[in-house]
Amino acid sequence: MADFVLKNNNKTAVRELVVPIADVNTFNTIVQEVISTNPFGCTPYTVGEVTMDPVVKNRENYTAKIIYEDEEAKNVGQISARSKTIAGFNAGISEILGNAALTAAMGGDPVRDTDGERYLCALRCHDAGGETYYVTFSRDQVRISSYSDDAIVATVEAWADTVPSLA
Image 1 (cartoon, rainbow, N blue to C red):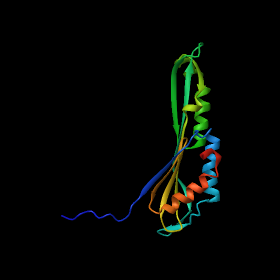
Image 2 (cartoon, helix red, strand yellow):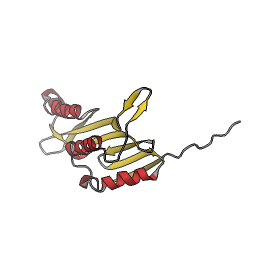
Image 3 (cartoon, helix red, strand yellow):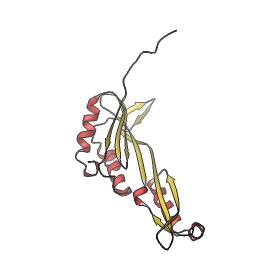
Image 4 (cartoon, helix red, strand yellow):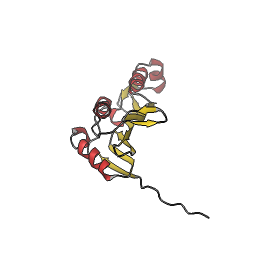
């Protein structure tokens, strides 16, 4: 019987944020900055005959939390709404907050629980050295995964050190 032989060593590095990213707009600004300015020096590459951008969104999701409070501000219910886009996230919040029938059914007034919101966006990055790796932003951490060259972490870390929200 043949043995498995290690061909490469993919790693993961995580930066836990001291303070969660304040809101979805700040989160989106950080992600869009990486995509538009390419601070990691990523390069385009070809798959088949298709040229891929150096940095692209690989997956994303946004979770809104709405709590329902009675007249004494006691929690009488809650709703979570998960969306694949920020536009869907914002539209979902508006629909839930404005839904009178749902408010009546829940037995309290809807209040947005911004501290309970969750955001996630994974970017696929192609390093100049040929590696494809992922930088995943969430509200409370930044994760670099599927890399083998430690220089990738040094590059992302140097950039993250310049972004106050990622301290």
